[in-house]
Every structure is written in C-alpha cells, then in structure tokens.
Image (cartoon, rainbow, N blue to C red; front, side, top):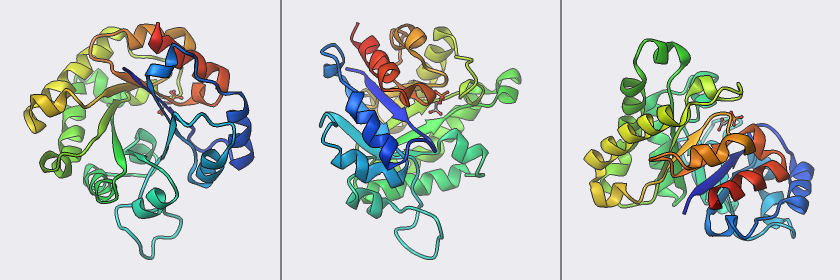
Length: 249
Ligand code: PGA
C-alpha cells in the first residue's frame, strides 16, 4: 500500500474545494492506497462536508503552531485542526522552513503538538540545491529528521516522513529514482536506529518535488519510496487521480 498525498498550498478556497471533489474519483486500482489531501485550513470544512468527497480521502492541515492556544495572530493550533476534522498535519514543509524561517527546534515542537492532539504528523525534510552541490544531502536530511524524531522516539504513535528536495519543489525538476532511493534509504536507516526496526517499517517515507502523472509510476516504483507528496499536480482532480492510479499499476 502506498500513500498518495496532495498539498494544495495556498490554492483552492472553499468553492474551489467543493468543485475539486465533484470530479475527483478514486479508481479501483488506487482504492487500496491511502489518499490524504492537505487543503488550506479555511477549506477544510468545505472538504469535510463536500457530499462528493469519497470518504476514503483523508484530510490534514498544512501547518500547525506548537502552542495549543494563545496570542499568535494568524496561526492555527493542533487542537483546533483536530476539532475541525483534520487527521494529519504536515510539519516542517520546505516552504515553512525556507520562506517563513522555521527551525528544526520549531519543527520538533510542532511534532509534539500534533502528537498531543492525535494528529498524524508528516515530517518533511529536504536539502537545498546549494547543500546538494556541497555533498551535504545526508547530513542535512538526517539532522532535520533527528530533530523531528525527538518527541516521537518514546511514544508509539503513527507518523510519516516526506523527503522533498527543495530544488525539486515547484520547479519541474525531479530527483532521479536513484537519488530518491538513496535519500530514502538513509532516512530509513536513521529511523530504524531511532525507533527500532519493527516500528520503523511501519513509517512510510514519501517522495515529493514535481511529482506528475508522467513520472509518478517510476518514482512510486523506486526502492524505499512508499508514496508521494504532490503539490501542483494535486490541484487538478484528473492529474491527482492519475497519480493515485499509478500507485496501483
Ligand atoms: P510540487 O510541490 O509537487 O508542486 O513540486 C511538492 C510539495 O511542496 O509538497
């Protein structure tokens, strides 16, 4: 079983969300996979209440604050997201890290907040082009993973990891299947060391960064790739359905 996740970023308001579900259908092949969408927080209710949404499509939020409540204008907390019906939370997405200056320590606190409120965290890690060119891929992604794992190591809760090289996000550039497999292999080893082999095998590691219908099957077929986190191509119901179907082939 693969995980096919879609991150809508700051696209699709409530109306666009309802429209998306009027034409998004899970094919028979895709039905055995786990499908999760991350609409903007303001569109979560529209997604949940959409009469056209296949109940197999699970929903999450794109970010949470690490405090449960307080004077944090504009932020969304984990208990609010859970109360509103989210079951997953992206944590440490590269745009949060690089556009909004989120640190590894912030990410760890957000993972802890997700855990407190039974949201399944999807911990995103990935290197910049500069870091890749400097041969620092492993160092960077393992450091990011180690920080996020601190709150997760002790409690036996479910979580996912997403490897998203920053240079591949929204650029049309994709990691080669070999690059993805190699990064995923390193992450898997570190996971095993941190939480034990038995628990680590239950943690899917998704690939993200310019995943499209044309490259999804190859990426999903790569060693160590347990699913995909799709940005741009998840906004179009037909493309996202095609990507989900690629997992079943
Ligand atoms: P992209 O985004 O598929 O548009 O490259 C992926 C992501 O940021 O999750």
